[in-house]
Length: 344
Image 1 (tube, one colour):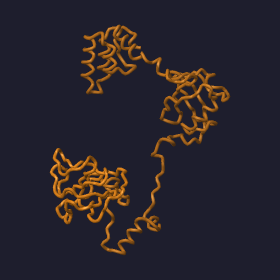
Image 2 (cartoon, helix red, strand yellow):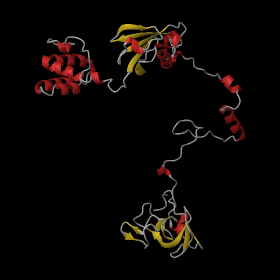
Image 3 (cartoon, one colour):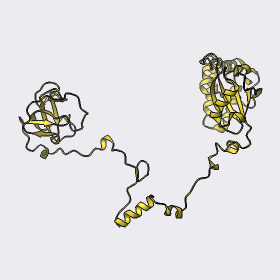
């Protein structure tokens, strides 16, 4: 490692050095740290000069500071796999025909190589009979896992090692990008003549509609998916239809009349008719004094008493939800109902 050398690095930097790692390691060397941080900040906007800038920044450090940085970066390396249960390992897997790398697959060391191949089949698509496994550590081949009866522990496999899968099937689906390169997939495209001859298509349905009504037009495009045939989603809560609130909504309703209110068929007596300045939505309201505690109000709105009643015995409703008539007191269902925008 260039951190072990007293000479400044002249070529490739073998591991990423960021502002955070430099800052944490150099906390005891303020002046050098500030110089390094300044250099990193200057080159951070230009990725083309980042490597050269980092090389210069690291080269300006002393041997002691480079040691501190190396120790900080590698401090937790021995704890990476400490959370695994005893007898378990986390290994990486690569494949001769695939670009992807399978990271940290967990196995029990008592798993046989045969069972290991069966599990790898589900990850890479290569049958166990066509797999040849090579154990690697640090990019170097250290063992061939050829005996299917042996357990993984026999080969001293440790977490962080890599098992390279060689697909020996000359007709494997994964060869030549068969499982990864989507450009190799032949797309099916139906020509117009074939589609015209089919029954029950959208094109046929549109023709039928136009034959029945020359002024017929296709449905509007769905604003969310672009599919005109897809069911439109329900409107947003704020997009509900406008509620009528004018004086005509309370015509024929007077204070003292018995009434029944929806939802819930709640019975009571009208205690107020008119506008209430403190309620949102404006317009005309009916103040109702219920027979039972099934309301949401006590007749007071923002400190102003509109009518008198006990807590939860009152409510303000729109006229469309109130029916006046002969509604004597009755036993009611006291279960709370869903909130409505036209009741406060």
